[in-house]
Each structure stands twice: as C-alpha cells, then as structure tokens.
Length: 93
Image 1 (cartoon, rainbow, N blue to C red):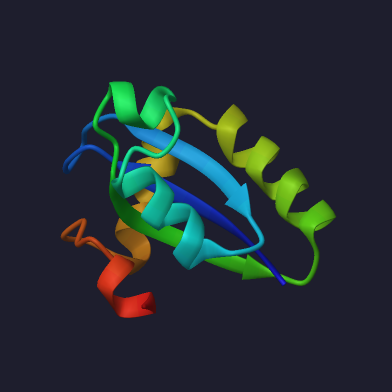
Image 2 (image 1 turned 90 degrees about the horizontal axis):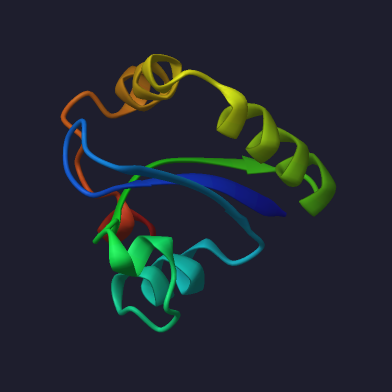
C-alpha cells in the first residue's frame, strides 16, 4: 500500500503534496523537522488530506497529477472530506 497526502501550514495556507509507503512515519518526520525541506522552512505540518492506493507506482502517478492541478482544485479536494482543515494525524496514529 502507498499514500498520497497533502500537508498545509494553516487553512488556505501553504500546501505540500507528497507520497509515501508509511504515512504515520512520514508525517511524523515532517512535524518534527527531521529533514531540512520545503515543509520545515514553510512550517507545513498539518495533514489535511490523504488517499491510500494499491502501489507506490500508482501513488507517484496520482501525486504528479495533483501537483499539476490548480490550487483551487487542491483546496476543493481537501474540503470534500475535511471542510475545517482539521489535522488528521491523530486520526491515523
């Protein structure tokens, strides 16, 4: 299994789209700044959306698709399942 996920700095804030085979571990790494990256520089730590797929290859394809979307489409995707932009991390641990 693999995951595509979106992190946000705040509601309607900076967005980051990523892919991983271990969602809990990866979001934990983002939240704790283990890697000097876009997310740590821009304080993008809230897990606001994720999707599980069967393989890492399909996850990478979906990630590329979402990254190419307009911002408003990404916001709509988030708000379809998480209208208040709640941090979903505690729901998955």
